Image (cartoon, rainbow, N blue to C red; front, side, top):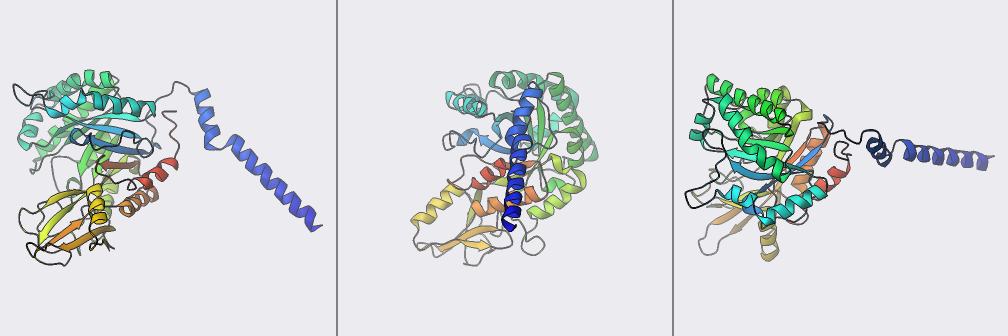
Length: 398
């Protein structure tokens, strides 16, 4: 009798599994989507993204294919002028390097490979000059229209379907300036929609969520399709003490801000389905007088250290070993410089740090992650992204 019941239970389990595979498996759902909605292309609020920023100066170091880890390849980029038009020349004899590389055969090959792998292509336009930005937003409607009109042919020519706005002013801003910037972004979005160019993504910093800077995150959330929070450079080359570039925790005791504090602020004003968490694949090295973490740095000693450069250094240095900052969830290395008698302290993200950021994004059901920058990584740093990418099915591009 027991054998009969065991056989019956096994039969029912097998039948249920088969029913699921036929009617509810991701493969079946994808097939049905292709059959029923072959032409449907739209922004899906449940769509998850992994943005990979590809700066023009790292193209030689970047891998030829990031499709295992990245869903959106964002080229950095073109520089915005005071009137909103793109700066194509650095001087009378030389092209602006971002524009020059955009036309290169090397980038064209990478973009073609990305399109073959069904990756979204995004074009980033940038300004980090506060004087330029001040003039840019003085006439926001005209200058925003100029920008989209100027960038539109490049987007169509190279297959970009997202315009990424990375405008970073380091100055405090009046309410009038904030309103002008919001008007500028709103007009950019309107012009992008009118020309059917695709989506608009906007970058903000952690400071924008805490201080009254030029960018009002709540306004950006109402306008943009996605908002990338650049949750890094909590410590930077000019920091007066050493520390993690993108600490997960430790704020109020060991750091000014951390990733979790920034996200808590973001949840108040930005819908989670629009939040993309920016994560670094680089850190910094400083010279110090002491071998204690968080020591004061020697002025001018800060250097950018990519994950790849640091991992390679550790392989070659037999007396060096990485320690984990448990609160920050990032490793660090401290070693003595025998020639000077001072110490080098390197804080950098690794595979474990990336895994922790992936977990935060997954647990809070955010829109995804954005990596700064492709070309900084060692081989295994992005493997957590591969697992994350496989956990969702992209219905919008299949």
